[in-house]
Length: 450
View 1 (tube, rainbow, N blue to C red):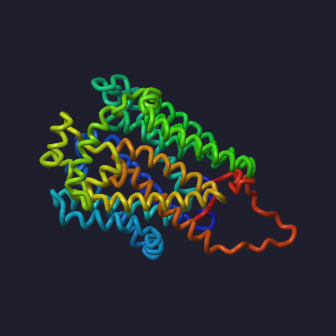
View 2: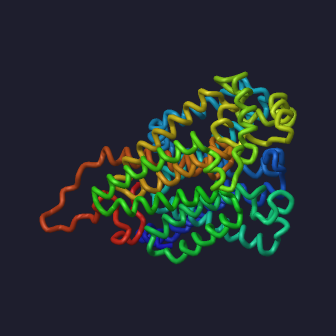
View 3: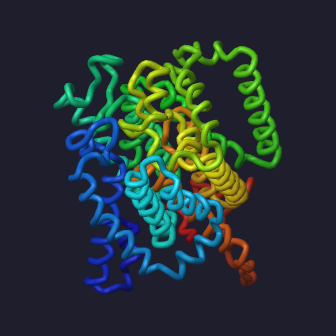
């Protein structure tokens, strides 16, 4: 890869080999974090950690993460102190063992989510933006290829037949998982198409493949997430045209969001009909109504991280009796967090997200990396409203989110410390778009912002 060539020009072949091995190890670990294929082969839909093989499989991953964090400990410490709400989340997760309804499960899953968080922090402090986004792009291109191939050669495994017959689920348990992953992957690969000229043909192919898988999944939420991601990219490119365009676009965005909120409040059936769904979001609102009552029984600290949905859990049993089916999750990341670590945890997660959005908006004024962060953050919020993807152990969604949170904190810190460089008379100045965003036309590769 050009990134490796640039980075290794002044290094010995041995050091270059070590860097390649490191990137390959990071690639493999991220593939495992996607939860594709292996859980389908060795576990059940109701809990990946029920498999002894999968639990043991994560041990070397955690050891690699621990070693990497020890290597980058000073930088890691400087990063985490800028993420106070993330620290609060982890403290609550660890402490919830003491009040959990199933302490053994909470202890095991708390270790897993802390290790997953540390993985994201390590990626943020170890790699620059270009390498990070290329790495995530390569992982999702690979997973999309495998999922598409599985649909062609093993349709009984990769395509649903009983519920939602004909909808693709790829390497995951159901269609929404495939659709959500591919919608998020489409944004990452689309961003690379826009700004990574050396590898653009590769990323174009990956983007088209991910879009096809979103459509094959028939997931309406995934389609909405796909449109949201590309809308962020289109909006960022459009706002480069000038100050008037920027202000008018922001105003239009505010009007559209307000209109959407009004329609959802006064006539939600119109939106659901457009999305091809009923007003219960395929039964989710029935689950949420029961869960709100369960949260009310233990509002502040919850039931312990990962403990609520155990097959022998009495609170979960009451939810399943009320809804008349074996509910596996809350189908909402915020309610799931409330069940695990209470409203205190929800508050910490919300404050962490708002801090990220503030930093991302500031970064987007002068860098396309801010646009990338905004896209990832908005998609994270969208999917967290209908799926339990927030604060989940051993998942690439949480690892990616933490990576983006930490990298954004590092980048904005460096921006505040950096002094304006003196430009000699007659020297060329960096090319910046009129709205402050770096022009993809004049920048052949991704920015090297640390």
